[in-house]
Length: 183
Image 1 (cartoon, rainbow, N blue to C red):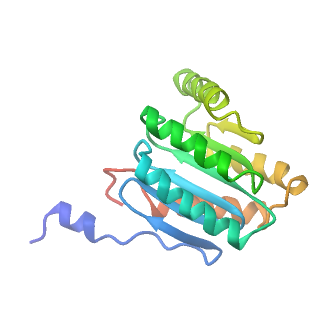
Image 2: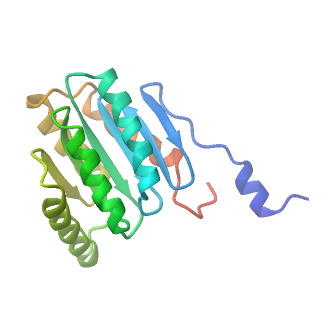
C-alpha cells in the first residue's frame, strides 16, 4: 500500500486556463504569463539564481508584448530574501524599464503584522530599487488585480480582461500550492 507521501506526490497540479502560459514550475517558485502580466509565486524567499531565471521569463514577456507589461509577485515567504537577492531584484527590475510599467506584490494577510511587513518591504523597495515605475504592495491577490486593471490601461494597456487576470491568478495559486501542502 502506498504511503501518504507518495500519494501526495502523485497528485497532479490543477489545470490552468488556456490564457495562462506556464513559464516555470519548480520547488521554490512558479512563473506564468497572463496577458502582459508576469505572475511570480514564491513559496520560499528568492535567491539570486532563481531571480536570474525570472529575468529570463521577463525577457520572454517583453518579446511577446513589446508595448509594455507588469509584474505581479505573490510571496508566501516571510522574507524578501538575502541581501544579494534584494540587490539582484533591484538590478533586474531596473533593466526592464521602460517595458516594465508596474510591479505589484502580495505579502499576504490583513492583520497588523502583515501590514507592518508590507510597510517595511515598501520602504526597502523604495530605498533599494529607486525605480521610475509604480511599485505597490497589497494584502491579497484580488487587490493587486484590481489596482493593475485601473493602472495599466493608461500605461501600455492590460492585454487581458480584469476577470481573466483574476481567474488566471486564482488558477495559478491552485496549480502551485504552498510548500508542504498535499494538493
